[in-house]
Structures are given as structure tokens and as C-alpha cells.
Length: 444
Image (cartoon, rainbow, N blue to C red; front, side):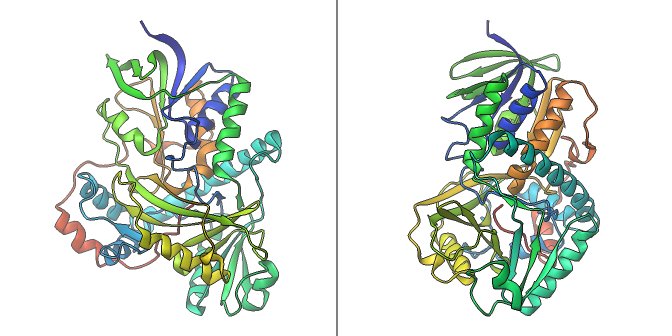
């Protein structure tokens, strides 16, 4: 016999911990299991990412031209968007589904959904910060996109104008004002776009502090518990076997990031989530680094101040579950940071990190009940935006568990929204290579 629990969350990253807190806050009995020690382990997607909360950037990963850019950069392992050939047997299916979403219509529908998630997520982050104080360095100073070229600056203004249709607040910062807004920037940069709603924090400290608050609110947080097997009978999960015992849950929430895929696969759910590797370097913070986070837009590199250190992050690499370090990508991040602040990229890092972000073909997360098991909820696939969307995901999951109507429409995020038929990969490559347009932003 296993231990009876009301709600069992599998995964102790940002989304799992937000679910645990929101469920406990709502009065539910909740147990969270995480394979590693502690929550937000070094191997998680959130541990050392750029720490950005970006309601000002509602563009989903799937946008016109992104796939074409990825194919153009296919053989360049140092490019901002690298696709390792045949990294995963499910990659051809994912690429075709991705191609279908790299069109204006799906992108704009995705922007509306992403904006709602990020805006509500930021509101909840403020609530959390009011409870936690300065424990994880939450600040809301905006996010400055910096452009090296006049063409890039003009394109950035066009993107901001498009985003304004979804309620995004922005301000063009001309060349003459750049160093007034962000002291320490190099001279000669073309301009910037400031998204004033955006914020930042120290990601692993946020997850661990929220786990502490969840525990104080009643959640049972158990690290060192790896889910080995999930058993179902008659359309319901009945047992979850872990390395430290068996659980018999009334409800299971799958929130393990990229690792949700093999877990859900045991239940016959073929989730189209690819592991996208991102990199970061943490360096001592020199004098002159501004308090506002920066983005070297043409080079896809983020620079985030975090107390006495600076986080340099960027790139997107579809390479399956490969966690090896491609040092060319690390060097490109250094170069991009140095283009913003002289000497920043030359600093010796205190940590070089990489993590796997769970990316869906339409760039939107999967949040909803399983179509196969009525007591399974999936909360995964947040790509580079799990930090910003984690709190609202937790709130939505808590509402689903309680049988309430979710405060946001979950139809665009449902588990079974992806078609299963895929044309040959040669056709995918041929059509995708002709795409043009906006490349993806960097590591968020």
C-alpha cells in the first residue's frame, strides 16, 4: 500500500513550486516531489537563467521567419538559434508543427495569450515579493532592448508598436539618452526600447523562497524523490512509484519541465515538447553596470544585474537532452555582453551554466487536464518564460484542482491541441528555409 495524498505535484522547478504554493494557499492538501536536492537544482531550467519577467515581450517563440533563421544557422553551433541535426527522434514532428505556427495569424493569437499570462504572472510576483521581502532580489525597473544599428533600432520600434496593440507599454530611447537611462553603456549605440512593466529577480533564490512559503502554508515539499513509474487504471492514475516510496494520489500535476515528456509518456501522452538548451555566465559586477536589465538585441544576449553579480545569458539550442557545453556559444555570449558594456565579457565567470527549457511548437505552455486521465493535470512547456508564467500557472492549476472556472481561458493551452499528422522532413526543410522575419529573443 502506498501513502494516500490529495494532490501530488511531480517536479520542483519554478512551475511545480508555484503550483504547490497556490494549492496550499487555496487550502488544498498538496505534496510536491522533486528528484534532486534542493528545489530548483542546478540541472533545472530556472537555476541560473537571466531572471527576467517580461510582460512587455508577448511574442511567442513561433513567429514568422524563426524556422528559416534556424535552418540558416543549422551548421553554426555558435549561432543564436542552433538546431543539432537529428538530436531527437521526435524533432522532425516538432519542426513541422513549429513551421505551421510560424505564421502571422497563429503568432498574433499567441501574443494575446502570452500577454495575458505574463501580465497576470507579474501581478502575482508582486504579491509574492510583498510576502518575501528582499529574499530573492525582486525589482521592477523595466527591460532595455539595445540596438547597435539604425536598422535594428527601427525594427525594434516596429515590434514595440505591434506589441502595444496588446497593451504593452514602451518608450523609444534615442541615442542621445541611452546612457542617461543606462549609465555604463558603450558610446555609439543606435538606441533602445524600454519596456517599463518588466522586472527581474534571482531565479533559484525565488524558487527556494517560494518553496519555503509553500511549506509554511501547508505544502509537503519532498526532495530526493524521483518518480520512477506511474500506474493508471480505468482512466485514472492510481499509484506513483518513487525512489522513496509509493504515493496514491487523488490528483497528479505533471510539472517537471522537459522531464514531463518521459513521465507523461508512461500514460500514453505524447507531448510535443523539445528540450532547448540555454547558457549563462555569472560574473562579478564591476562598477558602471546599470540597475536596469539590458538586451543586446542583434546578438541575442541578456545582461541582468543581480546584486553584486551580473548574469549574462543567451542562445537557443535544440539538441535533445544533451547537456554538454558548446564553448563557441559561451564565447558568443561574452562578445554580445561586451558590445554593451566594455570589458564585461572579459571578466572571469564565477559560474558557467546550461539548462534545458521545455519548448512547445507554438511557443505556448501546456496547461490543462489530460484527455486520457481525468485526475491528471499537465503544467509544462513554458519555454524561456517559466519564471514569468509560473505564478499564474500555479493559480490556474489550483483552480482546476478545486473544480473552479479558471480565470484565464485554457482552450489555447489544452493538452490535445497539437495535430499528429506530419509530412516528410524534406518537405519541412524545403518550406521552412524560405521563411523570413523575426529571430527569437535570447534566454529569458
